Length: 88
Image 1 (cartoon, helix red, strand yellow):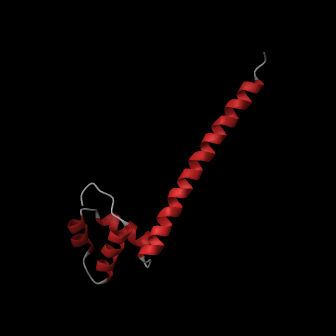
Image 2 (cartoon, rainbow, N blue to C red):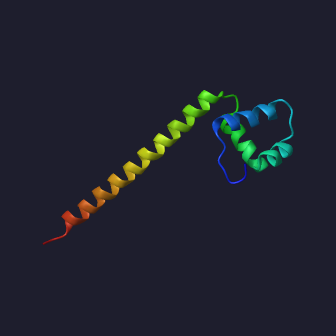
Image 3 (cartoon, rainbow, N blue to C red):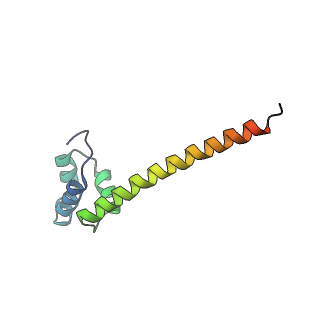
């Protein structure tokens, strides 16, 4: 799995293995991620089921799109203000 993002199902499965007693170092090696990544997943997805994790990912994606739209609108508004402030 090196170089690929894991799906919510895969992340939850790794966390279930961890909860069942698998060592973090062994899981990291097995799934091609760092131990820090597993701890980050645990902080973010710990206790969730797959549908909750998918919903979280969808909300994060939507939030990122909205932030981009807001930034674009703010740039447009700033450009218009600058244009209008210039004397002809």
